[in-house]
Image: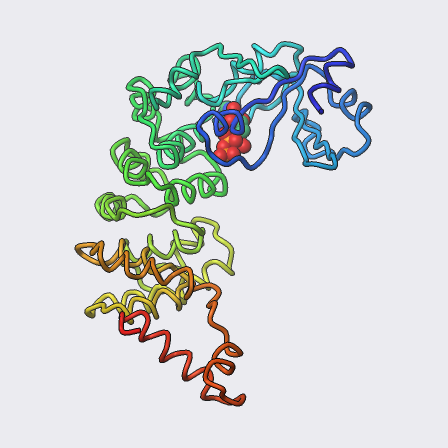
Length: 371
Ligand code: ATP
């Protein structure tokens, strides 16, 4: 409906960016970005409910009954400063100019109202071949905005794509420019890099390109990062878990964790949570892990059991994982489906401390495969 309205009013409008990429990859999408030839004031005139989210950058959020959309005027970015963020944005009326300034070919696709894909840089072919390629000359693109190097690595980690050789070479050439970028921005990309289900490849490229050397506090941890990358398993669901696992892999004590995470500009809340979890993990890692210990640990850390098995079992035991998987839906760690009142009903117990004790025993028996 938004595209139609813009078009009826005589403007061009397309879906662009990550949502187009993710739809073509059959992945779930979060935000829908629309690019248009209409200037911000013109967009605001057309729609009832809008919020200025970044008017200097040409972005207006349009709210409809169904969803919200970020509508951004076609723009070209001319001058770069400090290797990050153009010092001014120029609005243009041409889609081509807008797509040219985007980072990677798979992020530079546009879809029109009739569903046709506008593919000026062979992004579709790169999507098919799972290749991450900079738009235009990669050397120039990373030089003008060094954050793109971290974005490249995080896309590798999330999509499992390979870096096109020239793109990788350019990252190796310009890695030191990362030192000039604000830590907050690197943090966002680094966390995503740790969390992806293809982080093995992402973190390996992070180390091999030597980007890690120019990130806060990581200079001496190349090998530990490679170990982290070798821990196979599904995507890491939360930021807290990603930092916790990183700290365990880097074998940091509390003082070092605080120092390290402060340097990364993590929030105090996050630092507190991670420092609370790491020692327990480090302690338990010294012992044999039977199912029950694993399960308890998982519950303490709000990590799922199959996760812990993947991470810390030296030889992940598939039979064990299957067994636990079988019970996870019932005894889900986050929300234990077996509730006190069900126990009361089932065993005909009155209310009292025995309820939670019974729950514990039942839980243990299930996890140990006795029940
Ligand atoms: P995700 O939504 O999974 O984080 P994304 O690609 O949507 O991925 P955003 O940061 O929302 O990431 O960016 C939206 C789009 O804007 C990108 O797809 C890309 O086309 C463009 N873009 C974002 N950052 C840059 C950048 N640093 N340089 C060039 N283009 C960029």
